Image (tube, rainbow, N blue to C red; front, side, top):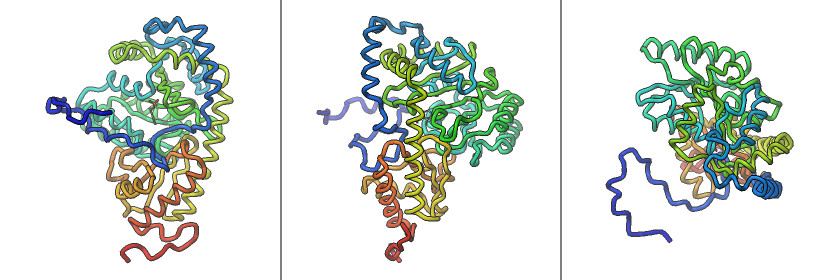
Length: 415
Ligand SMILES: Cc1ncc(COP(=O)(O)O)c(C=O)c1O
């Protein structure tokens, strides 16, 4: 039961609150939005066992705020140390801060570095949350062009020079170098070297987000940027994509000076990340990280193939695919004349949800014919049926694609 009379003090809400959230009406039948995981691959039984075992062993810790100190449970930080070693990062548990999702890592780093009026560089297409959070800090965003290999260093160099001529030194360059969201690229090692050299030359820190770095389909990417120069980089990661977004666990790795400030900022924003989740994830992953992630990647790669085939079959050459090297998203480019925002409502009526490109881009208008589809959550049948249903909606609204599954559709609407 919700109250229907209306809160008497709505006129006193702070000016800067976001627009009201619509009432939640459940998930759509074909859910291609957000960064959900594969429900079939949540190891519920194993998690139940490790939860029981860790509660019996360490349950008394729940009596305390931050039983192992403000940076998070030691067992999970030690696991993160081991995990990031695979990314070439050599650090100690005291260099790791456990966060409530890597979204909190983004907030903390923004609070550490940004003042209103600052400028930051983001990748032209990027995580919507990163854009929203930067805007909320009152900072200006400059989008840096991407290609199939990630950040274009030549273009970034020009941006830094142009800003320099205006006397602007950006507060950071935010990048998702290993399985970029939404394009799925991996930045090659020489570009990583060049990026660090450029950032050093201009005195700009790098904010590295490795949310999807464990989900590579063809072996690991090159070492993390943090591994190459810890003094130049703040690194964040997440357990949302490798295990579960609902557990709300992420981490930051940073040099002591930045870490001491991040810890102070986290103390201001909460009283620690949930300890039970930390115990469970540490215990589960110490035993089975590689096996779990290898199996998950095989499932995701198979679902990607299903989605890529479905898009090719239903949309033909009308839609270009950025083939991801891992992760959970397929980034699509529709013909220039199509503004995918026009498809949102009719698609919703047909039970389909997708992420319109403009919400995942620094320049919304420039991304109006892009679309992001998540393939992790739906089953393969839902992927096939949902993409076919999306093509039908697209045809009804725009007259494209004229052919689907090699069959000519009826005369274009309005023709
Ligand atoms: C690139 C990137 N960073 C950070 C996040 C935040 O994830 P979480 O807070 O669940 O760790 C996401 C979520 O989709 C993401 O795509």
